[in-house]
Length: 482
Image 1 (spheres, rainbow, N blue to C red):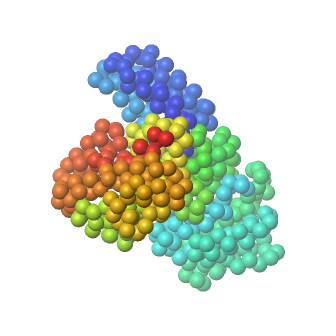
Image 2 (image 1 turned 45 degrees about the horizontal axis):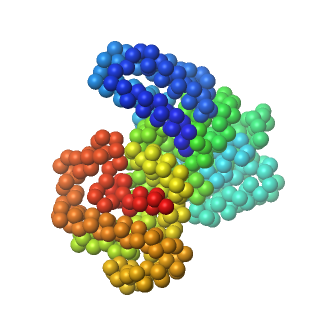
Image 3 (image 1 turned 90 degrees about the horizontal axis):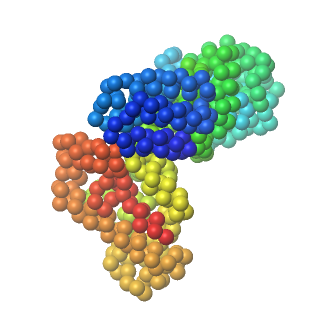
C-alpha cells in the first residue's frame, strides 16, 4: 500500500534534506512535485490542491527556511498535514455505547468486499472485545449472498440469522432485531445489498432498513483499488445516507493509495478500519499517524509490536524467554522466529513498517527475494535431524550435502543459514551477559527504547548485534547476495 506515492515523496524529500539551506523557490518546486505525486496516486484534485496550499504556506515561513535543518522541518510539516488529512492523531473506533443489541449497518457497492468485511468485523468484535455477535444478510438480489455470510459465520465462529426464502430486506432486518433481543446479542451486524452503481432503489432500501433497525453505526465499505471512483462512490453515499465511518478494503493491494487519502476529506467521516488481506483476521483499526509514517518512509514500529503480540504463541514466548535467559538458541528457535515472521505478514510487510528499510525493501525486490526465502530456510531446518537442530555444530560437510539434497537447496544456502544462527546465538549470549531479560528490561526502562536502540532515534532501523531490524527478527540481508 502507498508504495508508489511513498517512493515519489521519498525522492522529493531526499533532495530537500541534502541541502544545507533552502530558498522559497526550492520549497515551492518540491511542493509542485508533491502535488503531481498525489494526483498520480489518485488523490482527488480539490483535496490535493487544498493540502498543497496549506503545507506550502507553512513551509515557506521564515522559521522553517532559517532553521538548522530546513529539509527535516518541511518533512515534519508534510507529516503533520498528512495525519490531519487522514483524520488526526486519534483512532476513531466503533461507537458501541448504546443499549444492546447495538446495530451496525454495512453499506457499499456490490464487489467492494462488504460481506467478507462483515465477517472480519464480527470476528474482531468477538475475539478482541468479547462481544456476542449476530450477523444477518439482507442481500436478496445477489445469488447465494446469504449462504456466503452463513459459511463465513461458521468460519469465524459467529452466529448468522437463519435464511427464510422470499423475505424482503426490511422483513429480514425486523426478524434479525427480534432474534438479537431474544438471544441477548451485544452487536447485530446487518450486511445490506449492494449494486453495481449508486441508484435510487439502493438508497431507498438502505433508508428503509435504517428506519427499522436504527443503527448506531452505518459503515461504508469501499474498495481502495477502484481509486478515484471510490471517492465518487463515497461522495454519493455520504449525500444520501447518515454515514458514521468508512472501511477501506484491499489496502494491501493498492500501490497508489489515493482513495484512502481522499476519503476523510470527501466524506467528512473517519476511516475506522482497513482490510489488509484475504484472511478473516486481516482487518485492523485505521491509525492516521501510522499510515502517514509509512507513506513518508518513517516506518511503523508500533504496528510491528502489535502484530508480534497477536501472532506469538504464549507458550512459545515463555519457552523462548527461558532459553534467552540462559543464552541458548538452537535451530528449533530460529525456525520458530522464521515462522513468526511469516505469520506477521512476511518480509515485505515487515520491511515496509521498519524505519529506514525502504532501500532494503527495494534491494529485496531487485534480487527477487520474497517470502519464499522463509519457506526455503524452513525446508532446510526441516531436513536436519532432531540432533542436528539441537546442536548445529554437528553439521559437517557430509551432513550439509545431505541437508541440501533433502531441502532442494545448495550447500551455500546451508552455510548462510548456519551463519545467521551463529549471529543470533551470539546475540542471545550478549543478552545473558546484560542480565538476561530483566537486565534488558531495566536498560529499556532507564532511557526508553531510543536509549536502548540508538538507531531508532535517528530514524534508522533499530537492532541488537546479530539480530535483524527491529531487534527480534533474524537478519536476512545475507540472503540478498544470491
